[in-house]
Image 1 (cartoon, rainbow, N blue to C red):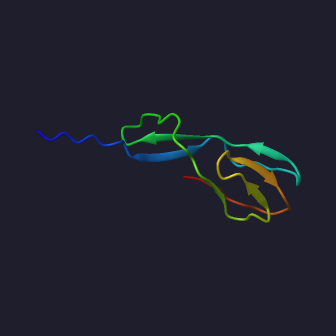
Image 2: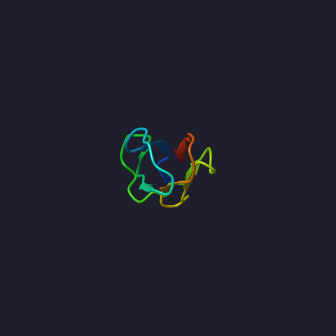
Length: 79
């Protein structure tokens, strides 16, 4: 008999909280919840963070720590 075991796929990544306003030089930690195809939380699953405008806000790609750099607007994404 052949048995195939597959890891559940990531269905969604949700960032906690809504939009925020920050002053240049300040930091804020973000968190995300990863869910599988059945909606179960995938605890310990690595999340990669990116920003649409690194000149406005920098984000640590592993931890989700934001640092405001300059006035403007940026979108932060977790995958």
